[in-house]
Image (tube, rainbow, N blue to C red; front, side, top):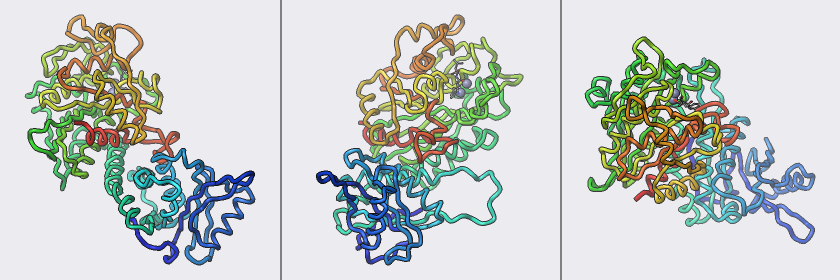
Length: 505
Ligand code: BES
Ligand code: ZN
Ligand code: ZN
């Protein structure tokens, strides 16, 4: 799908689908339609729809006219904008999604947007272009590659053009267009990694997919195999992987876009390609969803791919410990004690609390790189889905400056976040009887905070750190955001992490 900005008079082109936007204006008792420049014959049709009450230009409404045989366009659609004061980038993500769905269902391949009038109604070109592009591209993602291919390929939208008639408008709309395409595509790549089932996205597959995707970019990918992981004293990652015939991998991605003296920002993601719970096995219902337990890892991979494609002038490192968690003759047993890379010992009192184990070793490695910040993402606790559901990702940090930067980044992307508390008592609850720490709290409640303070035991306290628990937001959010799949990975945090990387000093 191509997105273009054209500085050309709209009415001089014959469009397959002409796209207009409308709002209403009140003058005394009379409410009238505000449309901008539109062909007279179209205007008559849309006014008739307005007068009859079938189209009120509310946000979310649309009026579609097919095979009109009118001059200028074979088909045309008018989208309602509702109250202009309420519009933002998210409104345009939703409009981009609506446009994509209309093109697909009407089997049309191109659309022309009359953007000069739109810009007069709503003077924030960046929110229009970023929103529309992200809405279109995120909606275009679907996962059907494992199904038998249909004999006749359905027509897919291929070209969307934004028409303006001023050079300044052209420049303004073009400014963030291509970066938004790359950001959305990297998010879709993260979604694809998540959607692949466990048998087709093993730790080895995840590493290979990363290496393949990084080809042609400035991203340096290094993959550690089991022997190297052992040599590097990552006993926790090895311990979690022991129950499976699939070997673990540790994926390191390095990007250098600034002077070597500039500290990198470091992202760490849980890449648990299937979490059965291990010996502390999970119940069967919905266990298939545990193929998504690598979505923290896929968010980090997507983030690093985007940073490289956007050629950001920063240094960044991504670290993804990848493993399966399976019951097997050599699996971790409850009570086993493992030693992390920093020498701390952990009593494994529940083999299903494996995410924090593989992250422990990865966070030690991240700390050794002396980055300007460590940001980790993980589908870490069921408790997070209870606390915040699927509308917000909970994050934990002790660093106020980092919290501010995170909140700002999330405002831009509309990937909503909420800061969660941590307390010294939580760490007390995580002390082990036989090891320095237990991987499970000794008291019920606050499961996500217990996991967070556990992770911090493996972070150099001189480095600002934030942990994102994406257990509730990593998949099945289509009923919340129209541009996401009803069922499937969301690629959550890729867009926010890239924003954060751009702004973090
Ligand atoms: N991957 C799960 C967390 C999870 C559960 C994510 C449901 C998304 C939906 C994690 O490895 C896990 O099983 N955590 C346990 C920890 C507990 C045993 C201390 C949990 O949350 O129940
Ligand atoms: Zn688990
Ligand atoms: Zn898990």
